[in-house]
Image (cartoon, chains in turn green, cyan):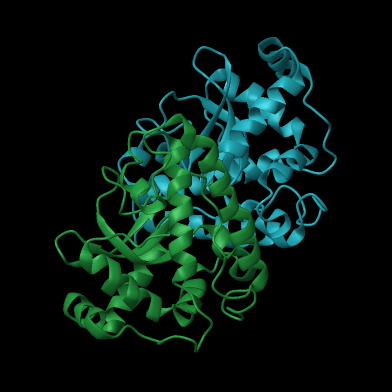
Length: 214
Length: 219
């Protein structure tokens, strides 16, 4: 199968002012597209993985090569990232239902979870991602990864499970508007998190041991 | 009050004025890159060093493998110092003298070397650097590194060598002007290389297998 760039669920300027239109356009149509192009170039060398859907592919990238790992991860992570965002006011501003309860029991409160996630996002040195992940043992974890690694990748990284929320902290995600001010970017990113989508990721997929499909 | 034998690390002055590399490398980028990013490495390096009397070279070559903050922020400080030293206006198209001869001897001609260096810079995944170094056998080697790692770092960099020419390919180095177009940034970088300074660092240090004391040179 040939992987393709998914449509954004909102217009390029819909996340203003927290995320500027030019960043969304470049990030989606150039950076994300490039990961897909390179993934499609690199995959044919691995005939047993070429027809896997994107989520299933994540599990088995270890043992391929850097081109597949980096670009498969890049493609998946960006799909989750776009899905996790919504114009301010268009979704619940906080988690709800069972996920809210689990966040409270795991981290103490939503604010404490937010602080922990922010620290994970701000403290990852150089390029990477911050994740909220439902681990295989049923507990929630906040963590970060280098490059485009993600917790679906068996054999890669320390934390494994199903990511339901992610923040991209590669400089291209924020440099045009925020330059070196990554903490300010993350503060603004919280304002546009699509908690409806995140709760759905948890209820429909993660709780059932399934990766969010794209 | 504790007396420090070595002064705390400080952000050095740039060896060129912040607008003199326009339009290739604009004033806004330079001011963020030097005034914010490099300054932050210096600040965090000082935090990580604490009361220890490490020199920058000792941090890069030896301490970096023992401490992640020293590796990241020491590397950040060293690498940016070397990068500034490689830049200048009134750039010639290519080096001359011994360095040019050495490049031609190993690659046949300068453009073949340039292409290989460009590929190293363009293909570095995520944040990192491309390097030209002299190895212990006296050969010129092109390499790349992730994050703020550098060829001097023992126990971290596979084959240690003495770097004297580098390009920063972290996105902050080019994003304001070039966005995702890293290849264009890398291509234009050659127009603002201070070959005189690079040749000096090659002859005085790298060829002798002495690490370039970048912070001392910048003063």
